[in-house]
Picture 1 (cartoon, rainbow, N blue to C red):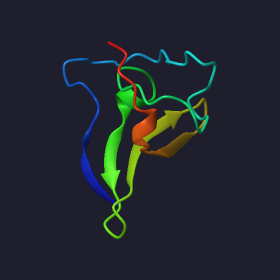
Picture 2 (picture 1 turned 135 degrees about the vertical axis):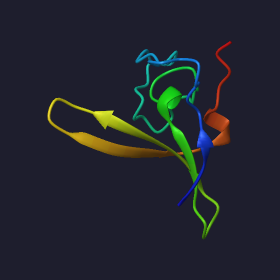
Picture 3 (picture 1 turned 90 degrees about the vertical axis):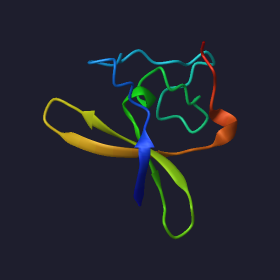
Picture 4 (picture 1 turned 90 degrees about the horizontal axis):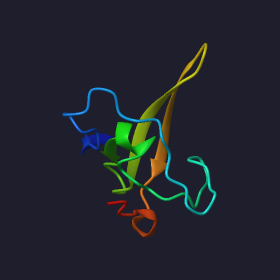
Length: 83
């Protein structure tokens, strides 16, 4: 996987943990919208597979006693404009 860029806004020191789910999904739901102004996408880096070209969004989930690196495949049909 090769880093392509970030979705983090450098002007925002601490991005929101607010989520965007108008259809009642959760951020780990396969059909959840990809809304870059909302968690977890506002904290993601974009990676591309060098073998097949697959794009994924990578972020780190911080729990009480763990750090979990997670990815989500980019599906263009799920990207939404929330502005």
